[in-house]
Amino acid sequence: MTREPAYKLDLPHVYSGKVRDIYDAGNNQYLMVTSDRISAFDVVMNQPVPDKGRVLMAMSAFWFQHFSTSMKSHLVSTDLSDFPREAQVPEIAGRSMLVKKVEMLPIECIVRGYITGSAWKEYTAHGTMHGTTLPANLQESEKLPEPVFTPSTKAEDGLHDENISFNQAVEIVGKDIAEMAKQKSLELYSQGAAYASDRGIIIADTKFEMGFVDGELVIADEVLTPDSSRFWAMDEWEPGTTPPSFDKQPVRDFLDGLDWDKSPPPPELPEYVIAASAKRYREGYEKISGKNLDQWPS
Image 1: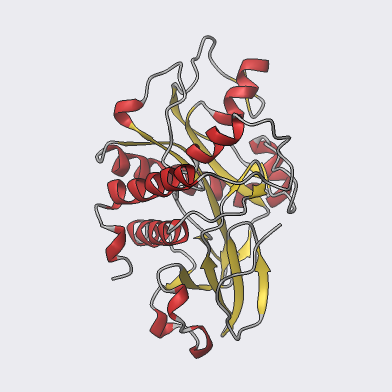
Image 2 (image 1 turned 180 degrees about the vertical axis):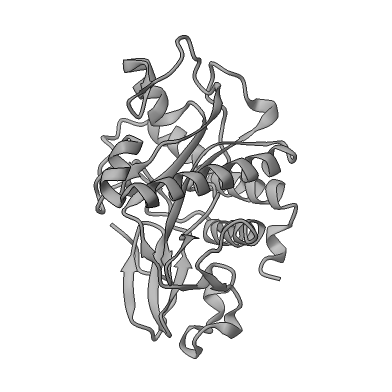
């Protein structure tokens, strides 16, 4: 279930997901607007997290620029004055971007530098990660010998993505495209992880979205945001534990403590949980970018 946006745009509405609303901006472009909606366990909560959408958009714009010499993106502009006249409304400033239409790959391009999340669950059960055997006696959250490309399928709304092997990715998109996506994903992850490390942040894993514009592979959607990645404070990381992340962790922790079956309708979130999540999102952006969120966009 998604919520109605708090603004109205006189543009053809294309799609609304858990977080983003997409409109056709003409000229073979989309307008993407990132809301403050927050989901946990695939359920959209009733209350938004203030400025979450601005954080996701500011972070993506930062990384698109940072990676621009390594790989092009679908980004056209985050400046309201460049948007169609119908979209120049103050309510979407800082949470919207004009992008090129992309022929998206039907796989998620995931890179893992540390073993955590679904990869840790698979490893504890089978000693593998995406079907590949890993060394014995790894600890949860331990750094892997080197970053690993671990793709997944793209599930329809309401369903879960499925972890797949690289060979399965080849079957879906073909060998050349799979190899290219793997190489670029590992390259971007390594660059981003090194940059974040210098600022005291570990990027444990991330998900890239890629696709083609005029025959060229580009990064699209969002990139290295708290919603698509796990950010840990370096001074809080210790193998064998799960460090708190710069995202919706306070929401997940609160919900885990309830007798809730993880299906709609969602429970109400206390104000302190919402405030804690908003603080974590902001801290992640400001630590990595070195910029104050209050000055975005500028």
